[in-house]
Image (cartoon, rainbow, N blue to C red):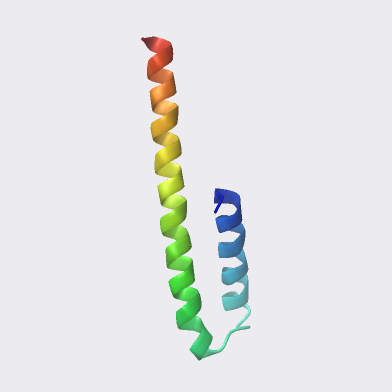
Length: 61
């Protein structure tokens, strides 16, 4: 999954929860999905940061 896709889905989940468009039974599933998406985003950001750092170090070295 791409970062932009994960963020878009997180925004959809937040919008549904904010508008109270979800029942209590569905809420737990959405919270779990959101948690997984946040972990995915963090992983992508960490990887990207590492790659940028390595590229910058290559330019300096």
